[in-house]
Image 1 (cartoon, rainbow over the protein chains, first blue to last red):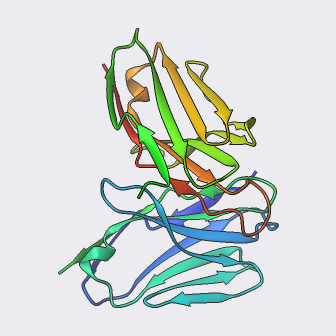
Image 2 (spheres, one colour):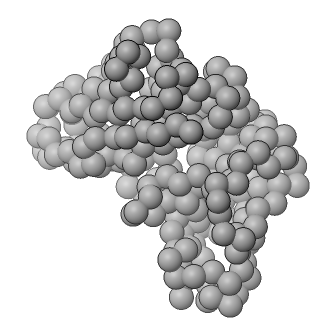
Length: 111
Length: 116
């Protein structure tokens, strides 16, 4: 089955800095890669996703990149703000099975 | 948000009790999921139902018993739990379990379970 590794487990940045979270996956057939954000005490919510037919996708301050050859994908957050503080989960799917989630990254943005 | 609701939000039970968690989705989705969220395993998939049929059981102990009477409702029946079962139990739904474009999962607020 699919295995998703996520790093780092904790990331601390100053407000205004950029943050990068990286994930690797094992199943070369995986073709869908979403990112979920879970604020403290709240439910996980999808913030951005990418499919295997594109290499990069942006939405305002967040972007996701995908390297299919290396089987890794990354979340980039620019100009971080305190409200970006949360746990971020990456996930992968090959279209035939449910999402496999990474173990999460706790992002702390200090004012 | 009212797309996926869960009750109760908090539950404290003894190891000999029997209780049930309820999940309801109002999104017209066909697939529903139970996840266990704890410090050790942040998003651990337990069960998947697609069109009311269980499609995945991720080696979950039999003291957890799911029930899906229709595509909108999902239950998790609990009995003779252990203290290590204390966790946040999240329900989620999606349009389907397979097929591109159908993967976004909508999560409920979760039930915080404490087993004493």
